[in-house]
Length: 247
Image (cartoon, rainbow, N blue to C red; front, side, top):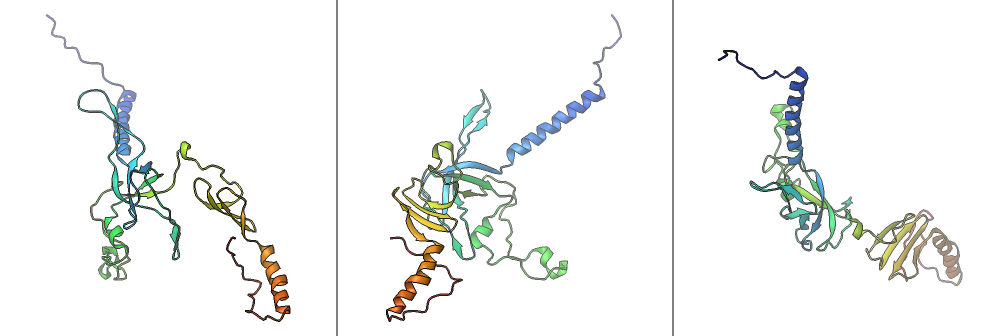
């Protein structure tokens, strides 16, 4: 019997580097899989107008591997009380009558925003770096503390309408004007260069205002009426523009 012991062939430096890189790649891949950023979603019920929140279903299934058996495609659970991201600012907002089935984009925030959502900038605690002891101004900036310290969590999201799937694209999309419209085209406010029009039930446009109309009223109609002896109100200056209600 031989006393010679056989050892496995040692890995070369190149092989060691590849093995270490594969381990780090697996760690990074898992970390990225656990980090939520944004995903399409749709409403499972009408918007709660009182809280202006929605309950959403993520539109993309996840591949889940159970303890036994092959991987399967699963739905993620619906997310409730998701704030709606509505365009607005300066005291004005654009709102939409969000209904069950409406599509959009879920945006997952970096941190827990529960305290901010409940309080806004009201009753904000002073952050340590804003205290006088830390060289700050000694007043609260208006930011809120995190209710729970977490990152890119499943529940910290807002719903941004309306990212559309191909079956729900708008028909007769205008490439030459901005529009506020119903999806089915039954009513459209169309804003083009020097022209604002209203379309209703697919009919002919109803004029709202043009610069030519404004000038005709200012330079022709009002002087004509005043020439008949009716003084009327003082007409606005030429720098003022008006929007007239459609007939």
